[in-house]
Length: 138
Image (cartoon, rainbow, N blue to C red; front, side, top):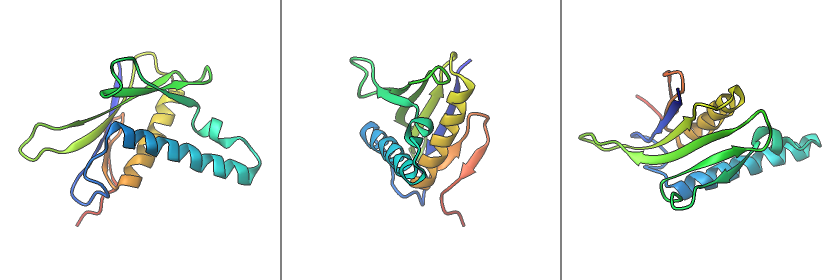
């Protein structure tokens, strides 16, 4: 059974929402940051920290995209954006681990979700159902 994590933009978040393009840019920024860390360590850390390529199915580019693993330890992680249908609509990013995802995918999915939620100061519901609050709360 697939698992899902959700990054929800709440009051106090750094941005009110994110598009797929902004999400891709943030993931590429993460890869760039890890490559700079690798330069300091004289190691190709970017490939270990982000062992994926960003792909999309033809005709689905505006709905979702996925990260395709570049090593046998990683298969894929799916990313999409949306809005809740409540009294006060909230924008969110959904991260899905398909049925055939590996433990490596789950670990990297958690790592990427935490990075995105911390960057955007958003609320994160992890794959195991636990909630992490990166937004300022009073």
